[in-house]
Image 1: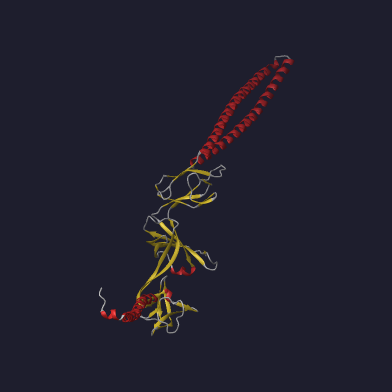
Image 2: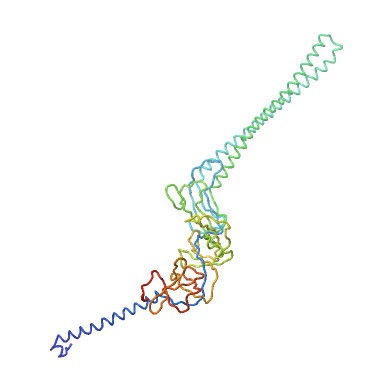
Length: 425
């Protein structure tokens, strides 16, 4: 590169010119950079009041649950003292099932053994009752024979007694004694006959009671054995519950032991879901059954489904943080389905409380309050001035201004502190 002769002859002039050029360019570049950065900051820090449609919503938080579900509990066994039961088969979580599909199976060996023992006891008592009845039948027949013989003996003695007119005095007395003896024998046999029958009937009844009790115990054992397999009464999706399993909290697995009555699983119908929420008493008069809402899931921000308020509890209960504010349970039915919509998910509901057209709307964070009086910071001649306003309905992000502002006014978007006099946005 050929250097001009002026710079070859006078190097100091070259450096002087470069320095002057730098001194001129740096302020210009700084000004443009500050201007480029100031404009976006100004757009972000201020807000131009405008009239637009305002949607008045109420944000509610709740939990999703299935309108139709079946809770699977570890079976309670009748007439058996069982500490826990071992799971041998288990439907996987999230698996779709049909009516009649196997959900869970417990180890049935103990119950089958108990059933067989109870059945053996029952069969033994059935045999004892039959044997006792046969012995009674034989004893009855023997006593009937003895009774008939006693009656025949009495009849014979009475016939002999009729000969007393023609026999000797001694024979006549013998005949009378024979009749008296036959009558006494018959009377005794009749009395003991009834006692024997009553005693035999009591003995048989005792065995029958024992037999019936053994039969009920056998039926209980058979019923317990049939409870070792649980089948789904409805079509749906398998959902595991988090339960306490000995030394850990979690979902059940094959081989785990569960105690009777523990609800460790459920079958839910995902086509009919609902959301249960707690409604603050302050908002109670704003809602009524039939209102519509939009449901969002915290786990899936992009998912939105319509919901309808179905019913509202007329009785409140103490809130979670204070006893002075009551809360009321509300139930929303979800319209539509989605594979991601499952029970026990955290959900947010935006309840539609109505809308206003051509309303002055400002960001909610731009409105401050001082002793209950609302105010905003309005730009005036390059600085911000405090101005009282009257507000109307609001939602989570916006608030309607009824008076104090006009369309086109510029206000601070977020008035976190009072600006200094002459401060510019």
